[in-house]
Image 1 (tube, rainbow, N blue to C red):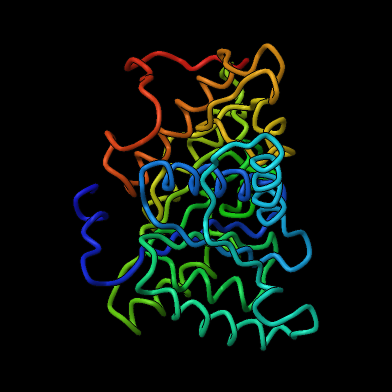
Image 2 (image 1 turned 45 degrees about the vertical axis):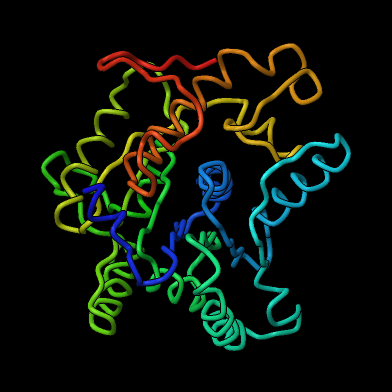
Length: 295
């Protein structure tokens, strides 16, 4: 899988779309960690924030820039563009689609990766971005409410899960991409905010995702645990891949929580297959079969 995904060759930058039609799933946090991992691996990265209203990824990157300047740090930054900067705040939805596609074409020769964070709702702009993805990454919170974005679960035990409206929309976008350019999209789903203790809910969600994955066409990647550190890093624009000290998180800046968060995110990025494993930040590895504790 890895060799196939890395063989981009002369096809231009690899487009990675982080998508889910439900807000609060962790799209922007993962997008930021992915961007920093790619930058630290020496890759040239451009990023887009297509959420006209929230612009969480844009604020995350702005926080990183300000923190670097205030503390005289050399922090990696992507070439970032909020969609509102492409067409102006008064541009309509149709304008955003055409402006985005034209602007994206100007980046083909300058970057290795283009990471696109999409809004937590259905829009033409979001679907266009989904159709451009070489890799589509969908985080899903570990609950039936959030799982419903991808899988419709019946009320009875014998009711088989079925694809949701979002899953069908993604399938149509990816099929359209194959018809236009003959290139497939690697769709990866991972579960976010996992609890460490196994539960009936956890087992049911696992079964539903494993059941529906082959039918819908996505594959499952290692999930991320519920960790306070992911929320604490946002105001500074930092990630688990950055070197942290007392200025960032007090005496716990270099502690277990940051280390284990980095292990999890790196395992997820490795599974997606965007970089060879030996190029990712950090040296820690989780032994096979060993659980990652929540701090």
